[in-house]
Image (cartoon, rainbow, N blue to C red):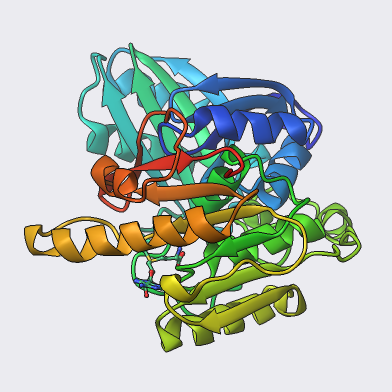
Length: 371
Ligand SMILES: C[S@@+](CC[C@H](N)C(=O)[O-])C[C@H]1O[C@@H](n2cnc3c(N)ncnc32)[C@H](O)[C@@H]1O
């Protein structure tokens, strides 16, 4: 495969967020963007996979779909896999591993399927399979068609590479970026998170306003593929940030440790001077001076039965603060229990389907500008 060859690129997200990821991908001018279950596909070449990893804020992973094989049994799979031109994509000196899944196919043993493909790669390319290899080849066998992809990201993309500290129940950066977009945030207004934890929403919002590319400093798996060109990549990453906006991004939390973490994380991400983190409770929140914008938070989630009263009081207090002091601001609240959202008394718009997050299902509740 030449660096300029075109193929399908898959950008993965949590089910329920495909539509908003699609909007982001379209806005970044990728070609032929289509929503599919669990993500978005686009058409492109290897440089487009680098750009997707560098620029798309909402995707969890970027996969390059390098081939598909019609297969009905394991021997056939191994034989066909030997004909894939692996040396055009993988390097003989970089260990790899294969992950396989099987659905409604004659081949149903995913472990055996992965082994056969590993053997084909090892025999034809000379690369060594290893459990903790930096390169992952993914084989999805569905209706007897084996689609082969290479994970170009490596570590999941919410790891932007800046966070020094993480609070309890942090929001993934990728998901935070998509929720911000779903609330209509495109970097042109102030953002307030009154329960900021490690500062995820505030830092994402500030980076978006500054035009900072989310993958600007972290390493990616594609750097260890045969198709990589370091010079082109360095050039791509070097794009200058936008001018500083006139407004700021505010986080608060009643926990002193959270505020310390948020400040450290914002400084590492290069948005320390655009962000302001203060320790106080939700009930002491007042809007910053200047134009209204967006208040967004994921408040503590409902779980144990004993929490009900305490949580209801917290959501009620959040709702009252926002209703009485934040006229003109929009609100985005992420929670796992619709009754908790209801306890705020805020005029929420109809919601979209819940999204899987950290073993639970969460929903974004949004308002128009508050009266
Ligand atoms: C689910 S965490 C938010 C995580 C955050 N979005 C992140 O990505 O790290 C909820 C936060 O609400 C804070 N919190 C709980 N009750 C509060 C209150 N009454 N006032 C302010 N913050 C509160 C907790 O300290 C915790 O950091």
